[in-house]
Image (cartoon, rainbow, N blue to C red; front, side):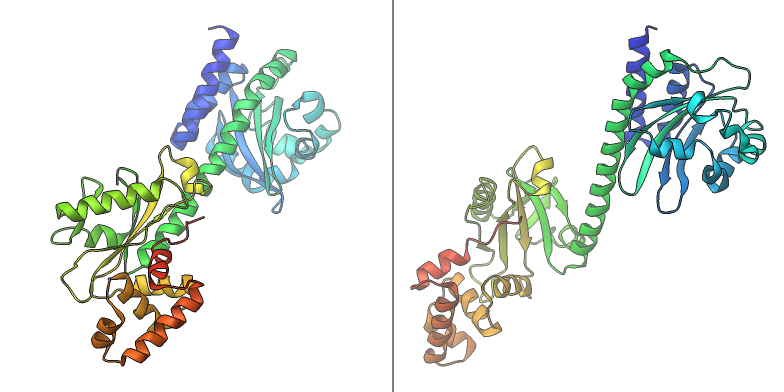
Length: 370
């Protein structure tokens, strides 16, 4: 295997370990071969705690690795050199285990030599305000010191290690954020999904998985949101396509049961192209929310939040969105027509429009998620 092939093989092994942490032994074995070192380790140094952690190694017995993390990393004479050296700068014996550092007898004679460490080399591959990541390779006492060839190999492999570290951090951040976000969504009493333009479900909370099935007019079928009625399915498809065209697309409400006094409502809200979720996707996305037909609390709460409405005003707006007239709403709620018109006037003022038609059109264009 040529030098370039060995570097490429090690880089591939590092990326494999990024995707599957259980593969770190393979990655370290490849790096061990690359540097002709029977021992290799990648670990993080925590600036706040002043010690190493997440210590992945090959060639160290488990006891030695644990002792290094728990104590010896704190007195390792190489640590100050590692922390002060620029990222990507190769360090070897002359910097890490020189005559001065060997005066740290406790580290050298109680840990390094008993663990089989005689020659050392390493490089800081990544650093931020919380921690740094370091690659170290070690040879047995009496072995040849790491020379210029090791420095050249380090220069070639460090960009891959740095990129893998950044990707790992990003993946952790996304996973953690997704976990928190799903916990919040799962706490809702309404079905919430994120769908693409073809209505394929990207995310669905527990309520959606539970409720969007069986006799519901909108269901998740083969991981797609579909309407059980052909006309409803067409309207739903059009709404999702419209929302996925851009953040300014109209979305609003779809009435699921036109024949019922209190209709279930679907809100399809466009997700802005600048949103984190959209940047990671290859297709446009939209947020799909189905309110409980028996408890349309979610739609009411959203409307109240968007327009700053009182409960009575939000109920009036819901009636207008259903296509009811002021007199129909007054009859339904058992209030006078004057009261209904007062609510409508207040709605117009808060929304900044001068007609019911404009009010309804505005209400159907919900803000994009950004």
